[in-house]
Image 1 (tube, rainbow, N blue to C red):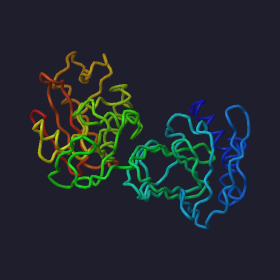
Image 2: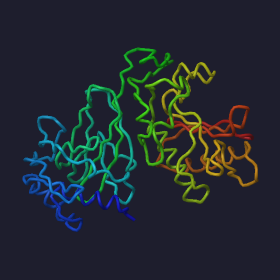
Image 3: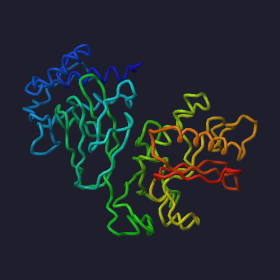
Image 4: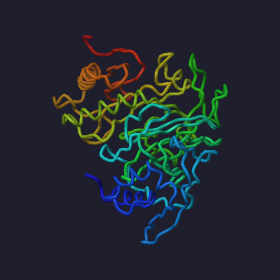
Amino acid sequence: MMTKALMTAGAGICAILGVSTAQDAGESQARMAAGDIASSPLYLRGPYAQDYMIADLGPQREDGDGSAGGPAASPALRGAHGDILAAGQPGEDSWLQVSLDGEQSPHPVWHASSLPGDRIELSAKYPFALSMDGEIITGAAKSHRWTAPEEPGVHTLRAFNADGEQQYLSVFVLKPRSGQTVLEGYRIGTYPADAPDGFIRLTQADMDAPVSPSFEIGQFICKQQIGHWPKFLVISGDMLERLELLLGTLNAEGRTNADTFFIMSGFRTPFYNTAIGSARRSRHMYGDASDIYPDVEGDDSVMDDLNGDGWITREDAEWLYDYADDLFKGSDDVVAGGIGAYGANAAHGPFVHVDGRGSAARWGRYGS
């Protein structure tokens, strides 16, 4: 069911795209396709029932292509009130399925990364507009090209249409590595191979940026230099898709009611990975691995009693290992990857390692 906040935002979006009510949405799609809306001035209904004329979308190219700020772009809709798109993150029932550089986004809430000056192309079946950090930056078109600014940072990009459907993206403009082993005082170290071209630059204000429906970027930061900001990391979409599938299936089958997993260890810099004596080519260094467990009962940073025997032991980690193994083997929706089971020690409780390395790997399961 659509929330009241989303319905309110949907009404505002309809106003932006020239639609008076949500009931006119189907008509608006035809109007946008025919180019009628593209030649009409738009009005934004403000929070106090006032109307604000925003801009004229101007003519669209025949292929429906528009570039945010580029020479082929429609004039940007400046001065728009960010509250139009202030509703919560879209769900499956309000998802505008947008492709990023030709690849379909797997969830209504997702992320994208780009080096400064690089372009991200977004496309959909029907025309849509874009907002960046609460400001509408394009008119309606079937595709848009967004050029990353030169300054590394975290941005919120929303694609939206007249039906109130949205695609929410956290866009990370990366800090180029440029061969450095220290970035702004944060120790990266040396990669044994395949070093990333750049890193997400994360401030304290960016910690809650969503990277998927159930996870935020701050859950994956390396445990080194606790009080140092900014921090730097990378994250893998393949790993996130595996985590989302596992969490969603556990919830759907009533095995847990966790909103997210506790991420005991996410990204590790090569410096930190070496310091703790981990594998030389650990997937953690590539943002492609996480050590996880659900923690709902007691919210005490310890894995829940998943096998129901009244104790929290390695057997709970092995139960989750077996569950994930069966799930991933039977799914064509995620790439192959690693699963490892670990017991408790003096520093932590039991947990399971999940990664998206692209090939199957299993370890740590007693008897396997």
